[in-house]
Length: 106
Figure 1 (cartoon, rainbow, N blue to C red):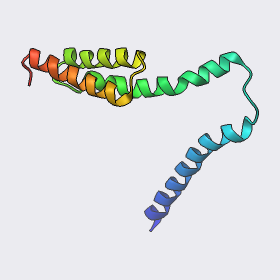
Figure 2: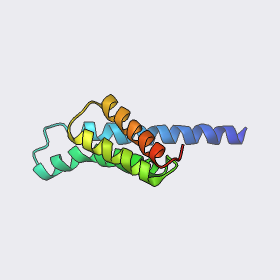
Figure 3: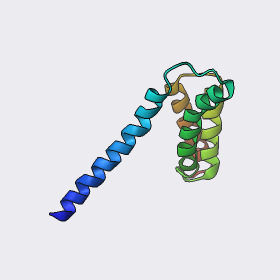
């Protein structure tokens, strides 16, 4: 019985913290952000966060780090050229497939 109460208490605290992290910035910062440094910093936060979560796993998701690097390079190039997400994903996977075949890994 006591462990059930603890579990619900932990879930409630986690929900409150998660909600506060998302709700407080919207309630505290009402007007437009005028500081150019802060605007540019906040602009790049989502990209840095996604990159830090995806890049390490991308290097070790294939049989060879060489094919993984090929996929990363292709995806970076196509993203730089502002191609669609489906196109970037397809060609990155295709590059990994081709490099794996050339290295006789698959």
